[in-house]
Amino acid sequence: MEDREWMYTEHPSMEGMTPEWRSKTNDFLELVFAGETPVRGIWCPCTECDNQVERDKITMSKHLGKNGFTPSYYRGLSR
Image 1 (tube, rainbow, N blue to C red):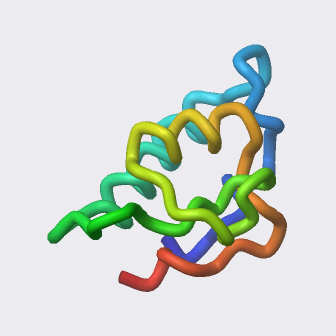
Image 2 (cartoon, one colour):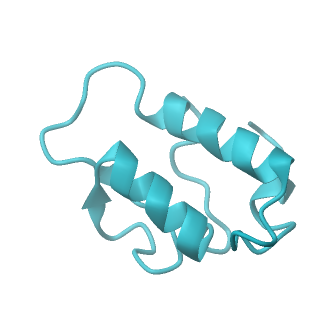
């Protein structure tokens, strides 16, 4: 997941969500939630949470679908 351009190519509204965005976001979620589940969650990279609030996988998925990724997001991609 070195190339992050897909995170920002389309606004992830239901009308503008591309199949690539949806597939790569699902891959991203699988990657960051792989292994042991943290007690509270993982920092949510959506524009609303801005990597400042811990969320579970389902909530993070909803947030990313509604709000998209925060600009210049980089955490969670190097696992």
